[in-house]
Image (cartoon, rainbow, N blue to C red; front, top):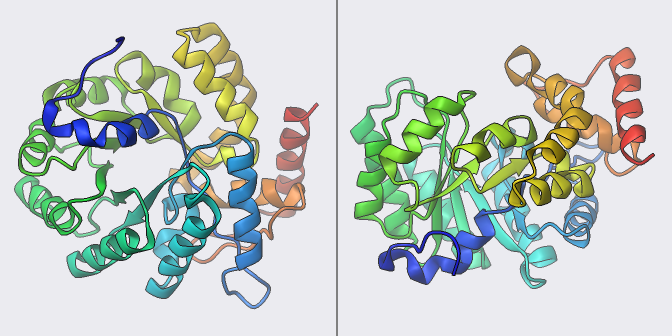
Length: 311
């Protein structure tokens, strides 16, 4: 056997740990002309991902406009994902969050819908203590002991020891999505928490995946995968092989696209992905406030990038 052996307390989640060590796709949520969730288009986008070789999906992630969806819409997106992908060998990691009762209710709904894991969004609160962070995630994890639980870490001040504490309390906390733009900070955090204890998912997508992979990540999230699954999977293949020159070749191909998404504190993170899908005729470009559609001149640039990937 190669690679680290998980602590026995986590062995029953071994299959889910493997699913996290992969491209973790964050599907967009398409909207119809009347502003509602476009169900058929969403189903088609999920099928396109799984048909393209993607095996782990996060409905209700940030690229899915989690914070712009109503509770009813978030439940709908979870159910559509399970109906379309849950029976076909894909793993579903549902995004949950907001206030604690809402997060717990969403986690239980995900469980009842047949999901495999939940990703707990960073608590949105002006005053987050480190011990309170543990309490928040423990409450969610305790509510769904059958599911794998993955905290989404965006706070660079959180100490790795706090994740270790959470893991001691909740054996179903099996991984972490780490999303601060500092590979050295990630390396230290992962080692303080337990490098082999958790599955480490690089939460800033392909642009940061090679750097994070070099210091401990074994998976990465992706919004770009909605547009070009084969590009994201080619980076994964290169990273798994330890072929960093090949990974950086992919990095250079997608660099401009990801830079556009990351600009102005990721103001156009979702907008750029939906614009690319619109250029392919797969999805309307509409996003909800506080996101906003791209100006006309930027749309042409996105279309050219997408065309180059298929050339």
